[in-house]
Length: 205
Image 1: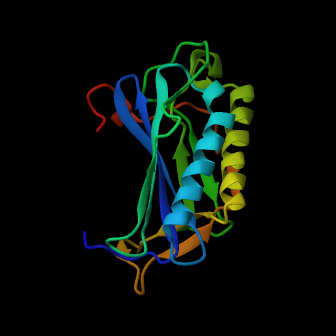
Image 2 (image 1 turned 135 degrees about the vertical axis):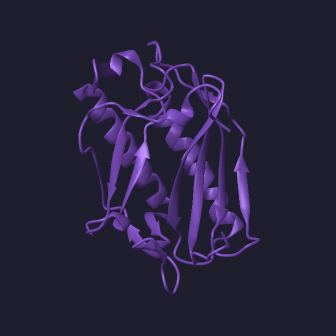
């Protein structure tokens, strides 16, 4: 697919080792101007501080944040930055991890209608104490939502707005380039455990 510029947008990646597999979560951020090397450095550092302060205790020891990577989506080539100082950060939960595909889909809402105006974050790894049969416990739900709302706030603090970037509409490339939607709320549609099969052994990168 040819490169399609997304002015002002940074892609932020959290790169993990999960039970020996390489997995990740990624989000888009609008910095309001052409992204600079300083923007990327500030975003990466804020992301690390957020993860250390919010996520480490929620993840089992089989999950470890090994690096944080960000890049500009405005130009190609463009600035990029990788943070490894102080990493890896392994989880500290004393509870056994569930199979690597066990996850929870968190909905990112913009207040606009249509699938293009929504996004999702799949929780990296659930542990035994966070699930009752096939349902994520109310306590874990609250922890997950609080952590992701804190991520949104951490990005705002470095002048980066968590956004949904839509490149296509009705299965066709958008005329004039991508459209952006601001993530205004983070919520759960339901608490049923979801599956990310690509996180199972032998299926990661």
